[in-house]
Length: 259
Image (cartoon, rainbow, N blue to C red; front, top):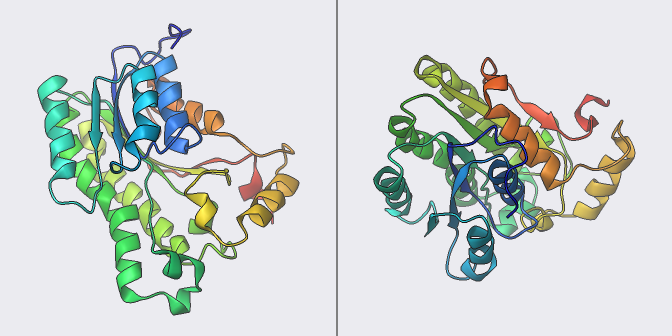
């Protein structure tokens, strides 16, 4: 990792949840934060994912590297206990995780099971509430919380199915957390990237068609990448964004403005 070229985040402590590999949005965030001087805590989903994430955490010199499956009791608390013990504080939290059972994700909303809807909502949305509850006492001097959404939260995107309502709920959670945590100097941002070729997105039906359509509709004429998303999130964590909170930030080349 080269030395920071503009260490505007120097001294800040950032927890990035959702790194799966070097193509994931969370990796783009971690890379941007580190290149701007922040110190990182990185989590991995399970032992199957660990070999893909551990080399990345080592390259970032991340002093905290732990498993985190939000469906497993105690793992979330263990991560924040480690942060409290090693750092004593936290400045940045990135929530970049989502899940729905494949059958519920690839079927229409009418066919989504109650169990599948509940799991999607718990992992993709309510886990942010749980993280925020644990992170808030560590953000003693204020901080920034960021959650990843998508255009399907606000407009119908064919084949996005159950994740549309779930991401809409996630954006609403961010707004209400922004209201509740604003007096503590904590800002909360839903960020809505354009479609990206990530492992998570590959579970969507006809995803390649979605990518091609987004590229053709984007006013800038091309798709965004994980670095675009990462540095946009890094900006939100800087003092330059100190009066921003609660609004969904689209990082999609302008696709969201098109009819």
